[in-house]
Image (cartoon, rainbow, N blue to C red; front, top):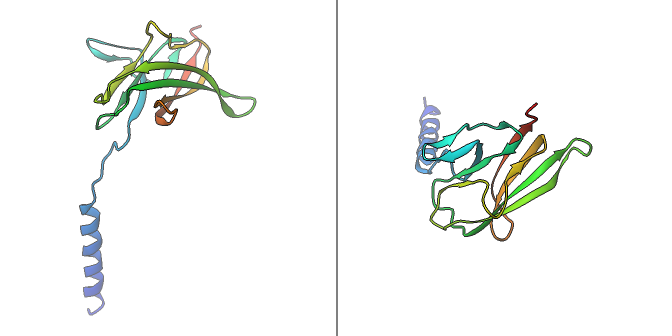
Length: 141
């Protein structure tokens, strides 16, 4: 009985400290993909698409705090087993944004014209990774 009291006290302390800390399901921005984004929101969210244009979505709990960003595509090279640089697209956003979509625009065409597996990054103005995701592109035919 004497050993149960200290053990119970330790258990209670562990529970109190665990409950005191903040826990969030989404602490960092999430990057994902859809076919298009428009008046009705996201259309065709997936991680597998046919070749062509895609929309890259980024969602965060709080403001991203970014202005000049880029979306970088790295394509998986089966020969080396590594991802190689493929393309990069520049965009401008406002610091208060926490839900952003990146798609084909007048400056660049976010075209996934070659089938393969791509690692996609949202980079800040210093080319530091803000968020990333994987997408598989398959041939239309």
